Amino acid sequence: MASEQTNIVYVTRDIERALGKTPEGNYHIITNRTPYAEEIKLKYPMHVLLVDSPEILDTYELLLDPEVQNIITTFKAQVLVFKNTIHIEQLCYEKGWTLLNPSAELSEKIENKITQVKWLGELSSLLPPHKIELVKDIKWNKNAFILQWAHGHTGEGTILISNEKELEELKTKFPHREARITDFIKGPMFTVNIVVTETIILLGNISYQITGILPFTENALSTIGNDWSVTHTILNESHIIRFNELAEKVAQKMQSSGWRGLFGIDVIYDEERDNLHLIEINARQPASTTYESKLQDEVNMFGVPGINTFDAHLSTLLHLPIKTSLIPINDGAQILQRVTNQIKKVDTKKIIDAGYNVINYSNKKINADLVRIQSKLGIMEAHNKFNKRGKEILELIS
Image: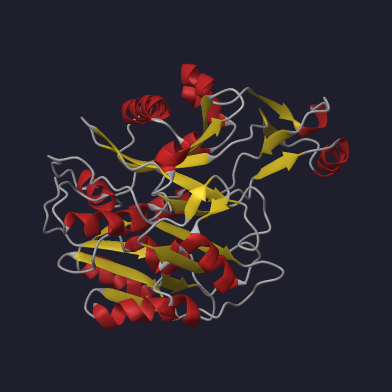
């Protein structure tokens, strides 16, 4: 069993993912040298190591760096990553390092859109009506539908098929590829981060998932942010109860399968039928974890009790007892400007001057993160509708 004094090294492509906890004491971060990472290193010089490279390195590539390997080995540090993979797991095993994350095999089984249906078993009824077919066998029935490949994130592996021509193009390109076909449902999407220990389930704060809004992304299904303030405006108390019941069922399945620590689910509210459907299970640390944790720390300073989501995740992986619940929040938001054909650079000074926290990224690939804008107050008024602050951000971006 680990102790609170065990050296922990979070190795990550993007330092923002590791900042749900302040890098101090026994908690250290190893990441790429970027302007934002340099800002963090200035504040915590003894606890942040920056790796220089002509290109941004992914987590596995960072772990291959000789200096990184020397630090982990010398300090007998336990390794934490954003998302485990077979390659990361194998490298840690070969080096004799302790990797804190749940197994890559289990993560793959749960996240893979094809194997997930079998893994869910009876709980697959939580999904919208669906079937798994080879692309060449899919029939057009004059109704739009969602096609999902086995893998994808932030909407990249999800395609809205709205006409027969789009389907025929996919049949030509990928006739023998398996896909999950799901009824297209109109309605807002929500996210919740959940921590599972051996004995307890900690449900986080439900956030409205900001999706597919121009000019932030050109992909209509791409996630671009979260808003914790507008959830109770869109969903009533009955919806919240049903949402939490759904989340609890998935969490129990994760727990019984041996999952420990953080995972997240996406749920869509079917406005037409007044129903909630499970859309996604992210068997890893969800992208909203860091900012949720920072917002939790803010209200905690004003006397709201509990533990933040990231600390609960780390405590679980270290087998440390958790004797409280996650800190509740009901405000705050973040939104991403992704790299688009129209926007490849943003003047962030005016956004910072307006009072928002800004994180810049060095990405160039279309739909990759370009700028993360964070607000302590909500930016959404309703589904797909900005409030005054949201409109201000939109104007500053444009």
